[in-house]
Image (cartoon, rainbow, N blue to C red; front, side, top):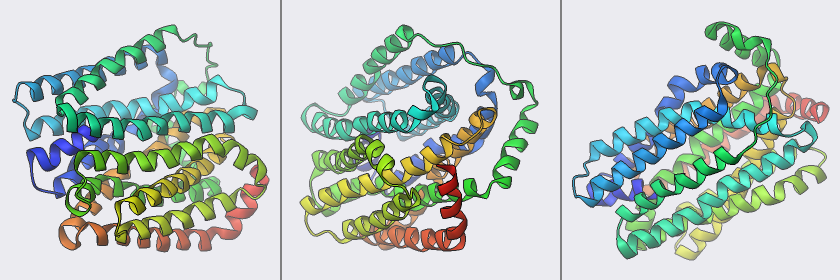
Amino acid sequence: MIAEQWLVYPILTTNKSLLGLIGAVGMLPMLLFVLFAGVLVDRVNKRNVFLLFQYVYMAIALVLFFLIATHQIQLWHIFVAALVSGTILAFESPTRMTFVMDLVDKKDLPSALALNQAMFNSARAIGPALAGFTIAAIGIAPAYLANGLSFFAVIASIYMMRFPKMEKVIVQHQPILKGLKEGFQFIGDHKIYIALLGIVGILTFFSWPIATILPVFAHDIFKTGEVGFGLLQSAFGIGAVFAGLSFHTLYAKVTKKYLLIYIGMAVTVVMFSIFAWAPWFSLALLVQMIGGWAISTTYATANTLIVTTIPQEFRGRMMSIYMFIFMGGMPFGALLSSGLVHLVGARMTVFLCAMSTLVAGLTLILSMRQKLQSKIMTMV
């Protein structure tokens, strides 16, 4: 991802708006396919599907490595690769999420989800900095080569995993559209899920896309180049890793779970507001770390409340709807940030996104505060 963004800007183009566009193209398939993918989750051999996806991911990375190394890379290659990867992600994400619920007991789900998030964000913490140093030292092609070769470890891990036999549910043979309709009807009948998914949607749309314009901060504002870009991404990841490692303890100790959502959203707004006008690179790194903790803690709280209370027969569909909002909303947020950065600059774009998070979050929380608090207390 770091190599892709740096390849788009400033190597292949000087158009900053393309950063948001490439992010939107990569996430667009989530809007098109992920809802149907959730209905199909229980109809496929998950192990075989996982293996197929990893082979395709590896092929994409190695093809891009070859094109860059032979100086044949063009901008449209990046767009095609992002579109194919996004399509795979649309089907992989709900399948992977249901695996977590299938492999552990319900009482262990908060811990399992926290570890899963810590693993995910560890890659986000280590990878960008490593990519930044790699690109600065030996070029961008080796970053793609390393990514391609890394899938051998993933594939080997899948072959070594011993999957339990999953319990089949009746809904797996329903027509896809009927199953999808029942999933939405279930959410409509349980307004607490609308509130939790709304919180996820607000963070996804207004806060997460800030990452798509970090190359502008590194290249134009702080003048730190590839290494600075990688460090900015890693700082957020480090905060998110700490959130994942500390979440189980925090979640167990806090009785009023909704407070974790309120505090997480408030800290997110404050940190991104400071980041928008940070005069020093060191301050930007610090608030990125704290912001990473805040936004990840909010996501983890909402996700845990959903996962631990959803009936088994709705798991696949709920996860597909969750991923539709979590990742499918990113293209619109990325397009928003890319349009704003062209009109008002990077700093004002981040500040406006932070203020939008504040307004939308307060509107949702105040309108559903009583229901959100009372239902969460009964859920846990």
